[in-house]
Image 1 (cartoon, one colour):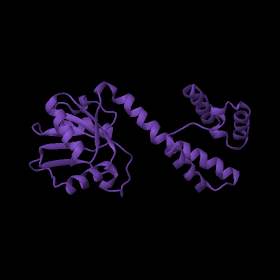
Image 2 (cartoon, rainbow, N blue to C red):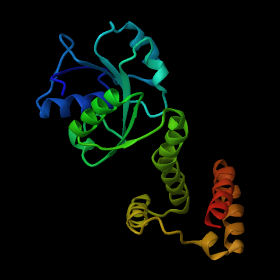
Image 3 (tube, helix red, strand yellow):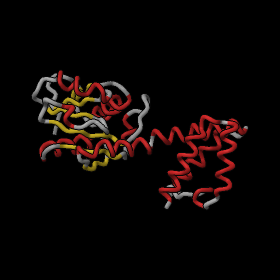
Image 4 (cartoon, rainbow, N blue to C red):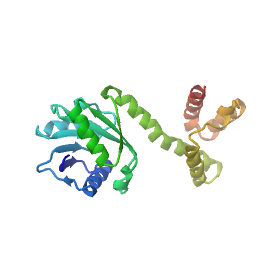
Amino acid sequence: MIDIVNVIGTGRVGSAVTARLDERGVAVRADGAGLVLLCVPDAAIAEVAASVEPGPWVAHVSGATPLAALAPHERRFSVHPLQTFTRDGGAAQLDGAWGAVTAGDDEAHAVALWLAETLGLRPFDLADSARTLYHAGAVFASNYVVTMQRAAALLFAEAGAPVEALEPLIRRTVDNGFELTGPVARGDWETVARHLAEIRARAPQLDHLYETVAGATLAIAR
């Protein structure tokens, strides 16, 4: 559908996107581009979009940023790869990931689907008004999992247990479909209380986190 894409931004996502477009035979350059794809930090999207000469399609890959940030362009859309990226992971990081597609009309939707599928994503439609809530969910699923792992690692280190022993537990939790186990699922509040007492004594920086997460787990489990 589009032969030339101008990818602006060479960070984790921009690098993977550029590599995938190159693999699929889509030229990545500024001259003659039919699509300008902004792979820049959210705070920079509006400024960068405003600097782009009208004419080509303009899109961003942000999860939370509304399409209005691409003003003054009317030919606009967004494709957000629902994935976490590393700098050296390459295009393979896109394989099999889902992609949130937001577009204002049928023509934009068709171009967005083309981009998502070219990148190797599994596209799904997302309303512009739902982007912030969607992105908050993605943050829980990725960023806060990192927070939980680091909190667990801190407690293991304090207890003298091998931190690397946590990885098989985390992987099996995913493989088991996130089925809840443990003291909250069992209603074992005596153990929860002992956890809190020990954390307050040995790792007080995690006191509020444990109490909050235990309460949230109980509320969601119900």
